[in-house]
Image 1 (cartoon, rainbow over the protein chains, first blue to last red):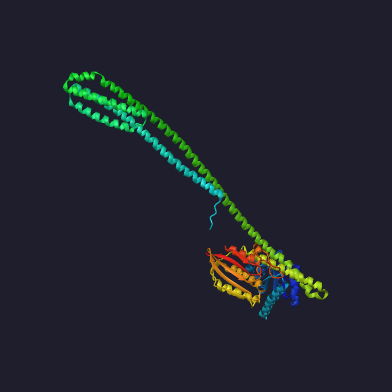
Image 2: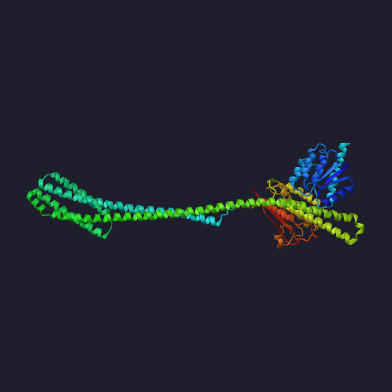
Amino acid sequence: MNNETFDIILAEDNLDEAHLTIRTLKKNGHERIRHLRDGEEFMKLIQDPASPKPKLILLDLKMPKMDGIEVLRLLKSNPAWKSVPVVMLTSSDSEKDIVESYELGVNAYIVKPVSTDNFKKAILDIGVFWITMNRTKHS
Amino acid sequence: MKLVIDKKVSIGFIAALLALASLIFFSYKNQENHALTTKNIIRQNSVLYCTEQIQKNVLEIESSIRGYSLTGDSVFLQHYSAASEALEKNLQQLSRTLSPAKDNDRLMSRLKEIIRIKNDFSEETIEARKNSFELSQKLIASYRGKTSMDDIREITGEFQKQATAEINSSRDIRERVMGRFNLTFVTIIATAVVLLAVLFVQINESIIMRSKSEEKVRQLNTELEAFSYSVSHDLRSPLRVIDGYSLILEEDYADRLDDEGKNTVSVIIKNVRKMGRLIDDLLEFSHLGRKAIRPAPIDFNPLVTSIAKDLKAQARCEKCLIEIQNLDTAFADVKLIEQVWINLLSNAIKYSMVREHPVIEIGSYKKNGSVCFYVRDNGVGFDMNFKHKLFGVFQRLHRPEDFAGTGVGLAIVKRIISRHGGEVWAESALNEGATFYFSLPIL
């Protein structure tokens, strides 16, 4: 396993979208980002006790093999990963998904807007807020 | 609620009711007929009885005369007068009960005549016996009494024959009528039963069909929900990518693009965002159709005042004058009806902002069991010829470069109001402002 530490883990199946998100984050000073293609990849990471924990997880809801809700359930039931802030990213505003995510303990839920400007703003505001929060808590 | 009755069902029920009503009529008629024939039979039986009694009385009279004539014992005279009295009564009874026919009248008067002669003869014999035994014996031996006896027997026999014939024919008629009635009874009952059975089958069928189609509608709704879910996810995702990559072009490659290139990128971005808004609006519209309505009494005064204030600030329209009359209370789902006010008021502001002094008036009134609300502006208005297009999805009566919007706002208003059981309508003339109305039922 790659034991390099990352600030942010982004789980997103759409490469183009992932590229845009990563670019936005990098442009705003968050260089150390790890991109995971699907839930299964994420599961392996969680199951490996040696893998370093990031400061923030950006999780896409709809992914092949294992969706965001299932990954979230795994994260929140694992003592080592439980305290890492998770922000859900999704295109759906289904009430059921929102309620379920918050019940599982997600820190924020962003319905991806079409406009990249708005998306950037949401990711930076909320993501950076949680990174900051995490830093204060650990220090 | 309006009562709607299926034409076929109502015809069937009326036919069944008519059949049962005719049954009542026929059974009444039959009863009447039966009573009539029975009465006739009783009458003819009485004729039979009277004639028999008359024959008996005449015999008694004859034998008491003979007895007296032989013995001179006054006991026979007592018998005689009792029998005469009874005869007189029976004669009267007979003439009352006899069928009124010309022949009968003639026979009856003959019978009376013969009996009178017979009575005279009897009196004569009694008188003769008082004077001499021989004279009375001679009178009896004259057979004058015998001849009148035979005549009486003949006439009464004729009456009896007639009465018996009448009784028989009445019985026949009664039986025939009874048989006919039974047939009618069975036919009508059978018809009514068949009609009701057909109706039952039809009603049952339509009930089953209805529950089947309700099930289908539920299924379609679920499918639609899945559909709009995938629309929201799968349609927006590629749009976002186009938007993002166009932005990269704009941000990182601007120095390598000439003016036309830059313009092209900005047109792409503008249209991608417009499509995003359309998708969002369409999704909201489809969500509205399925959301459960939770109505509660609402005091619209504070609600509308705060919406008006917010929208005015949002539109940065300080010159807008919004006048709110005292609004009636009505039953509605507060979240949904709030959307209605937002859409109507933002439209009113949008289309009147071009005026030097935009005035928007909000009010309500009660009419025919509904509360009607209206929003009136002095904006650009619309041509009443196109009013049927106002509340359709993506229908716009103005050019997008003149007024922004996707054309879903009024469709949403209409959907929310019709889900509350109310109506929406509008009045306007081009360049003379518009008034939008909606009604909510008073619960």
